[in-house]
Amino acid sequence: MKHGFIPISIKEYVNLHIEHNKDQDHKQLTEALDDALSAYQHGVKCACSNPIWVIGSALSGYACFTCITGEAYPEDDYEIDEACDSDAYQESHIDKLRSEQVSEIIRKHPDNYVEKLEEIGFQWFDDDWEEEEEEERAAVPQTEYQRSLVTFFEEDGPLTHELLDAFQAEKNADEPNYPLFRRYFKQINRNLKKLILWGLDRYPTDSSLLDDLSFFQEFDNVLSELINRYKTACLQEEDLDRFDSLVQDFYISTIESGFDAYYELEEMFKKNTGKRHIIARQIAELQESEDELPNDIPF
Image 1 (cartoon, rainbow, N blue to C red):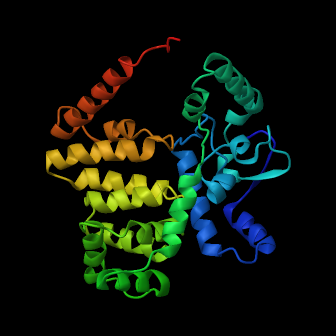
Image 2 (cartoon, rainbow, N blue to C red):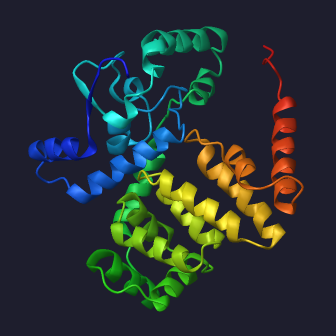
């Protein structure tokens, strides 16, 4: 069992959470917990390489207990019972490991410790984020397509091919209104997500829509959905050149969340097939690029 956690079912936790957070949407929280649990069961790890905390990850992004809370170990904290069958937390000393990592990096790399800390999961923010937010707040629809999409995002309505075509056309415009659409991604707009998934139901191999879902993953816990959609696309795509691109996109879109798409795809496709050869080639190219990296940085 995860060290120090109190096991609880998803249903029980949702009811308990909503009892103290009346504005929380029951369905949205349940879906987020389902996604986080699926990610945990798929072996997704925190950026620091420790197992994720399912409940915390559902609320604030995939990460372990320590990285989310700053505390060394849970104490009277809840965890979904299905995730409490792992002894990974009993064997880890997260607080000691993180402090030792930080101390060692600052000691060994005083001139570029920021870059090295980012490699183990630290994030740094600057004024660019504020500039983006100002652009997004000021953004207004400038075309008929944009007006129809904003109406759908904010008021809901029927999903149609015309709406999907408008979405695709605006993304491929010569001067896309990036701040306008970025605003709805950051807001985790449910109608935007619904439109992307509706499009993928009809065009499962569409790389542009998969990119949109991948971008949505930066703001919402949709990793399980993203993995399943990419797997479906890889199964259905018959053009090997497009399959090649899909495989690479699948790996890039999920590796930072701790999911190894190459390993998954190797299990899906038989040896001595065109698709398996492409997967093997990409794995070899990745290994070659990693082998070429210097083992240490001279000073």
